Length: 137
Image 1 (cartoon, rainbow, N blue to C red):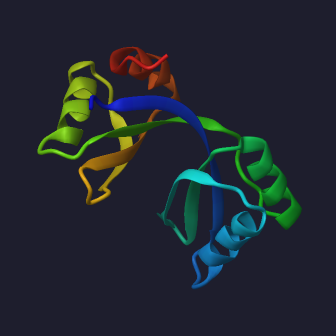
Image 2 (cartoon, rainbow, N blue to C red):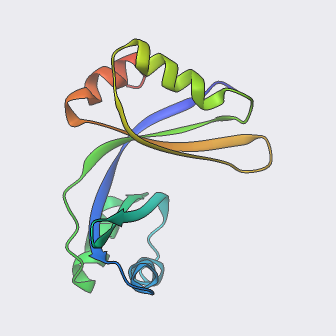
């Protein structure tokens, strides 16, 4: 299968960098039955940044607001799915590099059954160009 790439929205939350904080946030989403298309968490200074790509943004925002978690407004990110083969992510990165687009971050993972998924961030100023270069409508 050819890579399937789509532009979606993500939301950012910063929480204290302490044991159990991530689980506390994810429990809120589980209890509200909010399904995530993608999720990433990483240290940022003395805090942890969590990026969420919810299937239903309205349900996500409602659950987070009810729990008192201040999420940042939506921003675009790219989700990629394709066949897991040597060089799969390289093709996307090469295409963007040749177009002069600097990737802010990318996380990719194989499902162990022949396909992979990735989440790719670029600067806001590069979103439109990235969409065009990757053939995303």
